[in-house]
Length: 147
Image 1: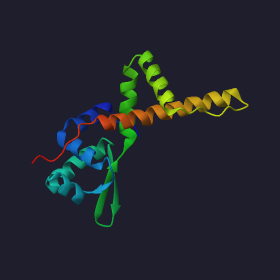
Image 2: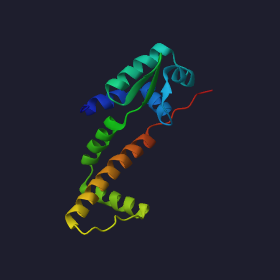
Image 3: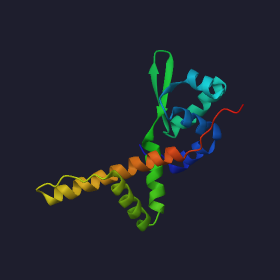
Image 4: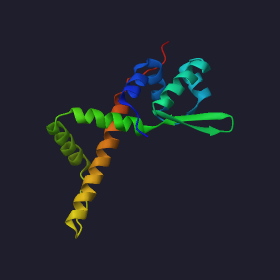
């Protein structure tokens, strides 16, 4: 299912929602754990989780009466691809070269050059999407408790 980029930006525009995303970054959590960690009321957390779920930024799994939330990367991957399309091709190529040199790995050669090229293209595409999604998550503002 395709999510509108506007919905993702709208969901992430709210500071409380970004705090929730940040709290879920390390591991899935129950609503009660988010309430305790973020020191926000349960109705407020639930309201924001609903918006994040509708924007496909989080997913929910039922565990008895508990609801466990985790980050859903599908919308973030679409957002990263959209942002990448805005960058000049030269910047993308430089980033890919840097990524490849840091990784220091090469694909094994195969007898079929077409299959080798397809494998490289698919592998690079997946690396770019997951790498950019991870970079996006790492660049989200970090919020801590104020004392």
